[in-house]
Image (cartoon, rainbow, N blue to C red; front, side, top):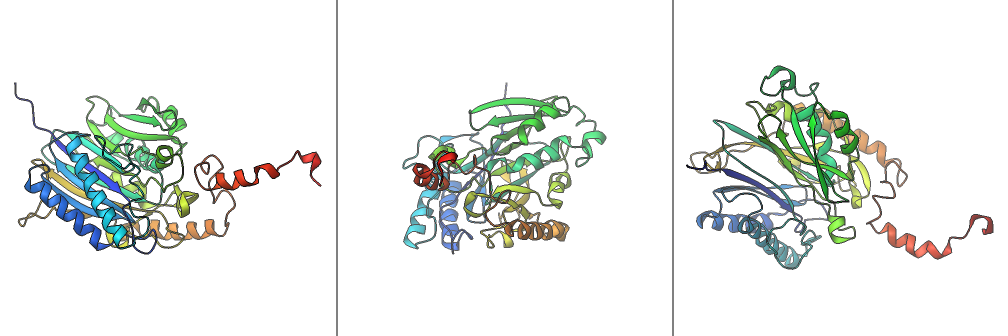
Length: 379
């Protein structure tokens, strides 16, 4: 019996160095990635690729048939990031290789610093994909939009109109502190799901499946760099892959949660709440207070193991947030961000003490610790 060939989409990101602080990935690093990935196509390792940036993160979008967590694919990404980081060092770029937390490749990049979202599936007659990549934010930042996309009928009309979606969806949620996972089904366990994923600093949606047939619908990165390194080394800057149409949310329903901004953890020094701003690739760069946090969304079709391409072989990519439909969200992000910054270093603009545990705040508390006395003895 022939086993149907499956396509894998891998989105792997890393902060390998940026221009003018935590601003944007410069062109020399793109050129290195282009060279490495072209060689991988020529060698038959991957079918095709697209390279972009989310702020200061270099993003590798790969189409191949090697499956998830394949050591050759992950080694390709690791070597690409390593070479780009070496170039960043020679250019004295900021934060060169800061996400490469290990010195040597050890099978796959999970737990080594780079963020990874991967999805293996049998291609449908038409398979629209939307990938999202965020900068200056944390792994739990996709909890809210993923809930809206796959569980909220006020956002996704298909949940009540499309008979193929009435079965609902299953959410895999990871407890990033205990390194455990649970599967919850909506709508039956919607309240339990919300009870967990509302705590965005701990519980993270990792994968979503259609309930009746376990069709993979979404996959996101869940790694928290501070937990890997044991200290603050930068925000997690998550990525995710979502499938659309034909019994899944429409592309427009996947994008609808971003018509308004919402607050995420991260922003300056990874220590503040900030409004997430949906932007096109041309605005995928962070400025004010190293932000506001940005997110890009790219749409494409998968065809015969590849990102569908034009007659010249160039992947056809739709820059979905480069649209005035998201102008209101951008305006809200500026207004909300300005209001938060007026609060300076007072909560709730700054993260709570638990989230600051892995930042330099712990060093300040260690320095002052011996000077604290029982309140009654303070003179």
